[in-house]
Length: 236
Image (cartoon, rainbow, N blue to C red; front, top):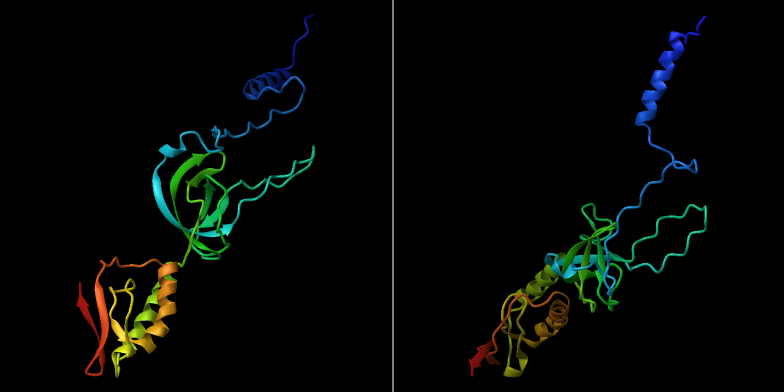
């Protein structure tokens, strides 16, 4: 009498064969297959992505949050190490803690100087895809210059105009008058020396940290006191 395979066992055998076809094959050492590391962007001799100079050019105004970290220490075998931060300076589109701030990684073509945590900087450069880190802003502005943010420049300009507007520019003699430098909202004007002395440090700070907002042509003007008011006498 021939042996017959029970129908239940035959059904289990068919199900196992079907499942084995869709299952991934295990390597010969018996370990499950590992996850392939993400591809990295090829770098040139300068340590920057190849052909990064062909990326779109732009100018950005950013706040420095953190300087580039140092080299990562080696991770011991069979240890769980925190991901090593990328070797880029971390900037943000807004001051620290601002809800709309977006992180921007910046790579300098040379070691930068003049950077200060929390500082506001105008940088020109190119945004390049740098796997596996994402988009990186590469800049040649390695001599970074700190600027005041727009809201602080507006406050300085408002203070300057308020002090200047509150003065009547009265005088008794020519020596009581001077010519204000321009650049904040006009190209200069005659004013009494006392008020000008109050405005001088504000104007200097605005010029150095905000940049003059008006480009004035060279001109010659002398201050004079006429009928108790400071005026300017123009000439060439």
